[in-house]
Image (cartoon, rainbow, N blue to C red; front, top):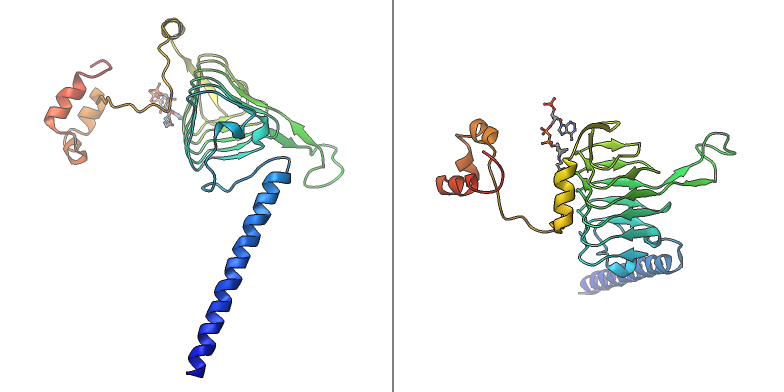
Length: 243
Ligand SMILES: CC(C)(COP(=O)(O)OP(=O)(O)OC[C@H]1O[C@@H](n2cnc3c(N)ncnc32)[C@H](O)[C@@H]1OP(=O)(O)O)[C@@H](O)C(=O)NCCC(=O)NCCS
């Protein structure tokens, strides 16, 4: 009996101690957020809202699982999109333009340590301010890394996994490490769509699917296994794109 009482007392004490610890930790985190020059939240902890940033336009969507440092140096346009898992160190300033989207897992760094001629190792006290500026209608694929100081021109496309160390000209399609220009958008078509106001938020859900001819040939025997039946196939065939 006495033994059971002792055990339950100890369990209660442990429970109270762990609750106190959780409270101290959350107070510490809150005070850091309020007092610190920048705000840091662990990846899955915080859902950002427009007020968190220096500026953020209407219709912009920032997914849960995005991590920003220095939100006070971030400006985002309207109808932009930031997919889960992006890590944006905005200490040097970061801009994402209207209708531009960052694919999942993209990393953007805007501040650099000083090392050449520095007074200490592995780097000095100075931090170099190098903003990243992404103009309007830019499509950044998944897992792209953008180095400090890079400017991405209007309408550019950054292929999946690119490591972008130099400025990207408007309309350019880049890919690789280091990213190279491998082509350009059709500027005339782009300007026409822009003039018509045919812009679409990268966050907007697309319900139309189309199965390209190469996929049809390559996966002819397997498409059904993924739930694409004959009827769907016809429907998709008549969807957007060219056969
Ligand atoms: C950049 C991109 C749009 C180009 O698409 P595309 O114009 O249809 O180009 P293709 O698929 O015909 O590829 C052209 C060539 O580049 C290569 N390539 C394509 N994407 C590449 C990439 N991200 N990195 C390196 N090489 C790539 C292809 O292998 C092909 O090479 P080849 O000519 O030697 O065969 C596309 O490749 C891409 O990266 N999309 C992003 C996907 C993504 O991240 N989606 C989720 C977030 S929205």
